[in-house]
Amino acid sequence: MKSKGYILMCFVFILTSATKIWAQHRTNANDQDKELGKVSWYRDYETALAVSKKTNKPVLILFQEVPGCATCRNYGHNVLSNPLMTEAIENEFIPLAIFNNKGGKDKKILDLYNEPTWNNPVVRIVNESGDNLVKRLASDYSAQGLYTSMVTALGDCGKEIPEYMKILGDELATSSRGASKDVYYSMYCFWTGEKTLGSQEGVLNTEAGFMKGKEVVKVTYNPREVSEEDLSIFANKNQMRLITKDNSYRSSPRDEDYYLQHTPFKYLPLTPLQRTKINAALGKGQKAEKYLSPKQREWLNSKTLATSKTRYNLKFEDAWNVLAEGK
Image 1 (tube, helix red, strand yellow):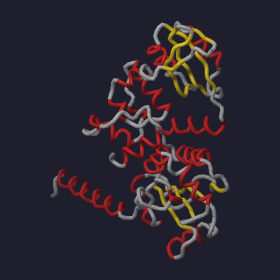
Image 2: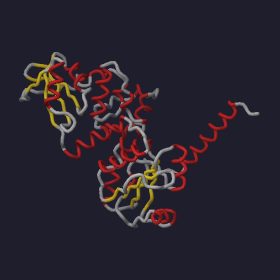
Image 3: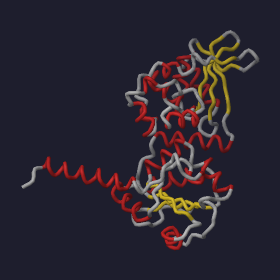
Image 4: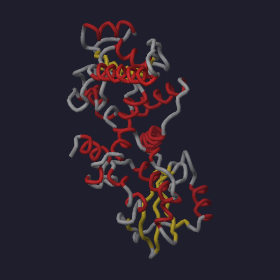
């Protein structure tokens, strides 16, 4: 009779072998057509369904013209290259690309789903049997549209939305609607002000600065999530006062995200909302890893991270791409 240790070793070997085989079916995100963005896609339908069954993750199918028109290229660049969107597609789903302008296996899957050839991008999210989980996404080429379908599918599967995906959703919603507003508060210490205000729902970014001879924090917030009145009530309870901006305002980058700056998080590419939430959590002595995507956590735990450059305050996508390329 085989021991439990032997059986476990065999299981791990089989799973590792299967993972290597599955990886061979995926595209190279750093060397592929622009229409595919930065996602590493499976290209075989049956393989994707098999991986879905093993991992209990839904399959996200991109029906795409490759090479394609301007709409297809823009979708790859504007939607499928956002680092957090890429992370969500690759980690919460099984990504599958079906070319709608090819024959062979691709054409068979097009026919299976009654999808037109030579068409603009279409997304379907299906279960391990290939059945639709949400309504077919077509004629909506926005990141917000794709995100909404993804969140709906995960919810219907009973899966929890990870924090980094929620951050992606908050930033997409605000940028697509141009809904953010700014407000300024004076206080005895903007380090404390940032960590306190940054912990509030609806706050998108905090910035340390000086105005009228006082330390202040500029708060960018989503008025759909929190009102200026509620923010000011909270600020008053924490010894902060609303102040009207004038020409004396100047930011103080050296003091911004003070708590984050003194940790390895500073070496990571971070979005403004990630910076705000992480700085607030660290300032309160809380764990902040939950706000990171899987790749960011991998980088954070890397032994070589400490030899890296400070990136948290750089343009997010540029800093991400440079680090992903090992520079």
